[in-house]
Length: 113
Length: 409
Figure (tube, rainbow over the protein chains, first blue to last red):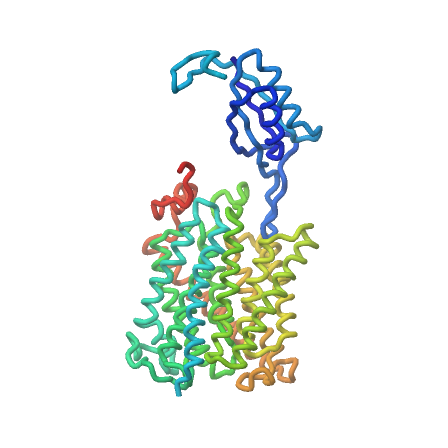
C-alpha cells in the first residue's frame, strides 16, 4: 500500500480528478495549502509596502492506493496537472503501513478501495 | 422658526455620520491581521458608547456652551438648557438638540480615526482611558475654538466647513504622536503585516463615502442650496481622489489596486471636508486629484524614511489630507458659493490663506503637545502597550477572549 501526496496548481484540480476517475481511483482527499518551489512567490504591494516571495495557493491531494494502482495514479495526476511550466507541482509516494475502514473495521488492502 | 425640512435633513445626516464609525471599523478592520480584527471593531463600537455618554453629559457643554475662554465650561452640563427651541447662534431653523446630536457623531468618529495609528498593539484599558481624556482635553477645546460661540479661531475668521481641522488634522496629529509613543509593532521588518480582508476595506470605504454626505452636506444645517453644493463637491472630490491614487500607483508600482482606490477616496473626502461649503466643483476636482498625490507620498515615501509605524496610515491620510484641505480652502473659497464664508487667494483675498495656515498650525501644535501629555499620563498609570507575547498572539484573544474566525465549524 502506498500513500500518494500530490501538490498541484489549483486550476488543475478538475482535470486531475477526471483523469483519476478514468483510472478508477475514486478516493481522494483535497485540501487548500500555501507554498512555493522554484516558481518563487509573487510580490504584493499594499500602499507601497512591498511583500516579496509571498506563498502561493496550491492544492494538496492525498490518495491511498494498493501497489497495483500506484503507476496509473501517478500517470493520471501527471496527465491532468502538467503544463510544462514551473509551478506544476510535485508528487510524493510513501509507504503506507496500515489502513482501517472505520465503518467495518476491515484492515489492509481491502480497506483502501 | 423651526423648519421641518431642515430638521429632518439634520437628523438623517446625524444617522449618516453615525454609520461612518462602523464603516471606519470595517475600513480599518480589513487592514489588520486576522488575529486583531475584533479589537478594532471593538474599539470603534465602544467609542460609540463612551463618547455618546460623554457628549450629552459634558462634552457638548465643553465644546459649544458660549464662552470666550479655553472651552465652553459646564453651563450646559447634562444638556441643561439645550432644548427643542432653535439656538440661532448655531442653527436658526432646527431644534437645539438636533444640532447637539449631529455634533455628537463628529465627537464619536474623531477619536475613532486615531485607532488607525495604534491598531494591533494598544492595551484596551489604556485605549479607553486615553480616548476619554483625549476627547475631553483635545477634541472639546479645539471644537470650541473653531466652532463654539466665543471660540477664538472662529472669531479670527478661519473657515472649516465640516471639520478639516477639528476632526481630521486633529485626529491625524494625534495618530502621529501615537505612532511615535507606542513604537513599532513587533517583527515589523521581517513580517510585513498585510491586510487580512480587502473586501472589508472596500465595504468600509463605501459606508464612509455614503456617510460623508451627512458629514459635509449635513454641516449646512439646513436642506438648502449650500447643502447641495457640499454634497456635489464631496462626491466629486472623492471620485477625483480615488481615480488619482489608482493612476499614481499604476505609474509608480505598475498596477492599480482596490486598496489604492479606497485610500484615495477617503483622502479625497478628508480634503474636501473643510472646503465643502465654500468651493465649487472645479476646485473640488483639483483638491481631489492632488490630495492623493500628497497622501501617497506621505505613506509610501515619508513614512518608511522616518520609520514611524502608523499602522493604518491615519496620519498619512487624515492629517496630510486635512492640512491640504484646510489650505486649499484658503486658496479656492469663494463668496459666490457661500456669502457667509470668505474669498480665498485665487479670489483676491490672500489673507484667508494666512488665517487658514494659522488654524492649521494651532491645531497641530496644541494637539501634538496635549496628546503627548495624555499618553505619558496613561502610560504612567496603566501602561499603553500590550506585552510582546500578547501582541504576537493577537489582541482579539488576549484583550477580549474572542476570535473572529473559527477554523472548524
